[in-house]
Amino acid sequence: MGKFRKLSLGLGVLALFSGSAFATPIGPGVAHATGTILIDSAGISFSNFASTGPDTGSYMGTTSVTQGNLPGPPTVAVNITDWVTFNGPVTGAILFDLQEMDPGFGTLAPCFANDLHTSCTPSATSPITLVQISANEVLLFLHGGGIAYNATGGTTQTVVDFTSQNYIPGTITGILAAIHSENGFTDSVLATYTSTVSLPEPMTFSTMAVGFLGLGLIYRRRKKS
Image 1: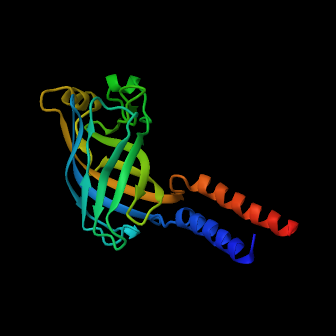
Image 2 (image 1 turned 90 degrees about the horizontal axis):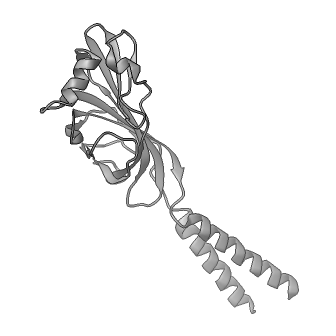
Image 3 (image 1 turned 30 degrees about the horizontal axis):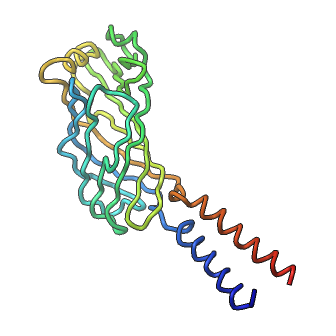
């Protein structure tokens, strides 16, 4: 193989390598929003979400947040593409795919009582946690995870936390009864979206392997010549 062909092959391999392996994911950052949550027999619905800040990192400049819903009975088994859209960041609109909801950190027994400082999770597959803060006040928690990305490529591990914006008047048993009622249970929530670790794009690892293989072949041929 002539020097020109060797050089062309090497540049081609490196071009493939850099085109995928070094695509730019969004960097770390945190976004904040507030909105309304409705929990009923149809699922968990979110509405009236607004960006509140302070937003940091890749989320700086966010002007609006479009928050998706969780249809069906509350469960940890979810996979929803473009579940959240962040408009306005300097790097362009950011999309968030929800890949899981974490199981609630409570247990079933407190769901039948209203004992202080107990945490209720209605089932092993429910992401909902209700905490009896005082005799007449409850806090709601939801936690999930997935990936965030924009048009520049790459993805970034991201978690989302929903908590009650204010203490909810009432009791755990009262809130559970409202959830199963005709009108469901409504509350205002704070949402925090935190992006941390960048993930390789799809096919990155296989492309890297092909790149290393190509470079190895070039090296072997050079040794033989």
